[in-house]
Image (cartoon, rainbow, N blue to C red; front, side, top):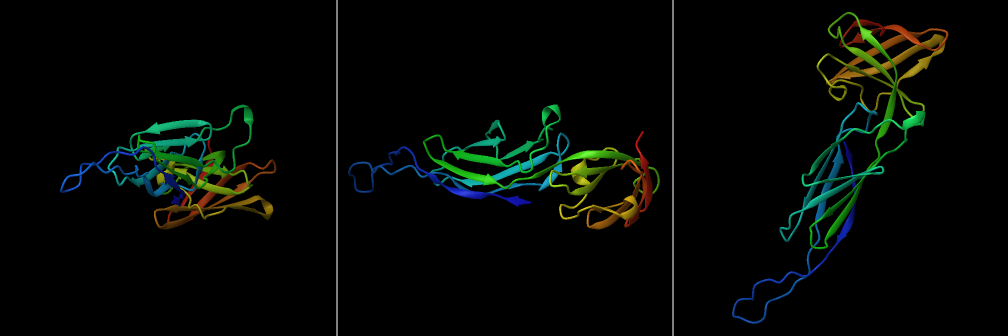
Length: 224
């Protein structure tokens, strides 16, 4: 989970409070801006067009004002009255490269001029470089995907029928590699269990087949 950096808010108009005990004129106090306690995103990396990223903000307002959350993702703006927003980042049009570090900008406003701002750290987006069908073992019927990142990194993810990629996939810290002879190594996770996908590339650089070992065993072949 990535945690936001928070910028202090600024106040707005001055509401009028009831007269103090014993009488006298009402006491005017400055509006107090919201305070962002935390702003987080559920994943640090994922596939463009596929992986939903859930953004969550915890904010308070000392005056009890109703808060509105203005999220900005790239060039788009999402205004929400709830503290949770789910976003899928689209792949760039016309074959342009993926942005290496999309980040979310957040303003929390109280409707009276008070604003608090935060920036949620960037996430990494990947594109699928190929898919393979898992043909045997407990994950039979699933699909293994090789992911490529703008920084040149490789990771793997897999999806079982009826499951989404984010629930079954590689850890953010697991980097894949291509060794001599075209052997591809992709560490995977299933909950806390480790799985290793070992595949073989052909002379044109395509991953054609491989095996799953570790907590789950099986064989995968290129998806037709």
